[in-house]
Image (cartoon, rainbow, N blue to C red; front, side, top):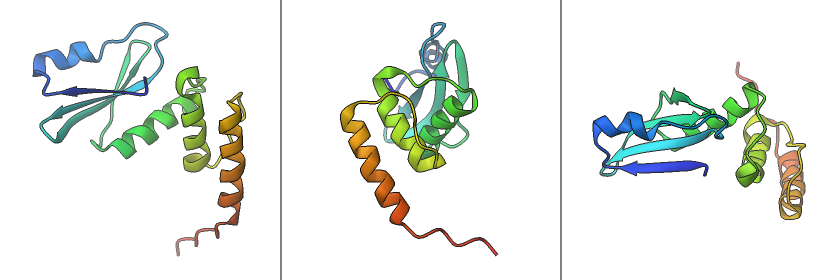
Length: 123
């Protein structure tokens, strides 16, 4: 599971929803009240990281960076997705084993990414 959503959860139940077992892969937990996101956390291996911004893009990038910085292997169940995000967000190709479909997609993605103009430097 890459993300768990808790809707309208009681405040006293939030801490319990963030508990994870040892060696459990890092994943996102999103807490909402109605349509509002009230908390986003990265949890796994008994750790809890509160994401400062409550938007899913920031949380997903922070999840990706957490795996990258702590040099953790992506969980097999969503390694292909995180590998694609790593290539897009960090600009470093994912070199671990992936499915044939993912390899094909990544090859096409590299061609498209290489054809894009370099961003202009900030002056």
